[in-house]
Length: 126
Length: 137
Image 1 (cartoon, rainbow over the protein chains, first blue to last red):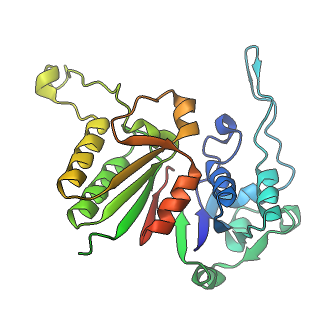
Image 2: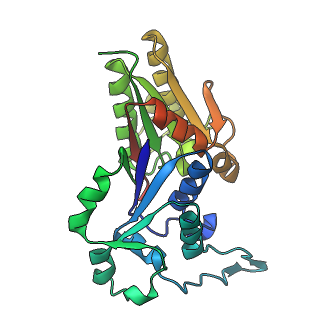
């Protein structure tokens, strides 16, 4: 079974979790044998922007040692042969420069999304 | 309805935060009443839904004591759905994401809930006719 994971909700507790929970569960399910693809839409397209640096979180004498590395987690997914797609219009609306996006991510227009979904048995929308 | 069919639900919202949780429980009940086996994978805050330490309280604004208020407790909803499944001879499997339980310290769940991993969600999905993701936002 092939399953497309559509990520819409962005930056949900990423500092507390030190990752994105949907990207994380994709890694975990891939490890369990899942055949997955990931589509970033809405605010989640920002996960593909390179150079993000959320380090430096500190409260009193507590300092975060392992801040989230969202682009690194996406890169690692692609290295596991999980294709990652991104809705181009959502990136353009947010003023994201395609040159700053993670290499290997496949940019799609909304009109191409239905055909992408046709390639999968199930679509899970997070 | 073919009682061999199974539906999987993945829940993500914690209790007492969002109407999506109530809607999810209603969908699960509807699925059971229509003869489906149901799998639930509770992820993130949803692992607190079957947490046994939830306590009912009085409500002074309502002018009711604790017995009169009968405050809803999601863990009792889970128990009730478990009973409904048993009465109908159906399976209701509920798996809590173990790491999510540890993060929140909600390891006392109602009977029938077990600890698991995202691998369980993938297995559930493969055994099911369809899977509904109900994410937090």
